[in-house]
Length: 90
Image (cartoon, rainbow, N blue to C red):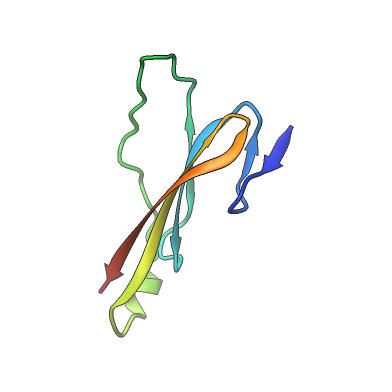
């Protein structure tokens, strides 16, 4: 069974994932599956390979601020943890 979490991501009830997005969209949003983590263990993922839009960056004429969001969806908990960071482009 799948449900829509806040932010529009669709997450199955038994799946944990991280999603990384940007506003404005200067790279393709990605979702990373997170395996079940036993108590006391940890999970580390490699640096994500972001597909950055060269066309978007080349058309910029002045510095803009963008928001990069990382959301964590944990199994059936459809209230994600969200962290945001502002970045300057150009």
